Length: 102
Image 1 (cartoon, rainbow, N blue to C red):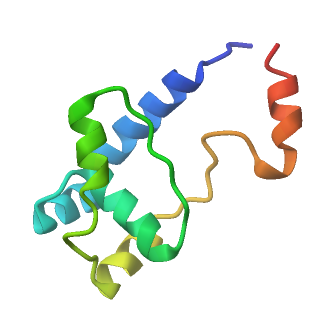
Image 2: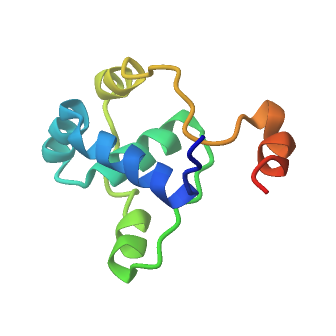
C-alpha cells in the first residue's frame, strides 16, 4: 500500500479547493484568495484554524481576514459543499493514526 506524506495530502486538498468553482467565485466576489475565503468561513463558524506557511506573502495573506465578512448566503453555499471526507487524522482515533505511521 502506498504511503503519502502530509504535504502531499495537503497539496491534493489545496488543488481541489483551488479548482472548485464555488470557492473561486466567492474569492472573486470578495477580491480575496480561496484560502482567505476558507479561513474567513472557519472564523465565522467559530472553528479554530491555525494556517501553516513558510512563505511570507501567504503568512501575511492568512492574517488579512478581518476587513471582510461572508454573507449568510455565502456561508450556506460553502456549508453545502461538505462531502464528509476526511483528509487527515480522525480526531476520534488521533493517536492510532500517528502510531501506525512508523
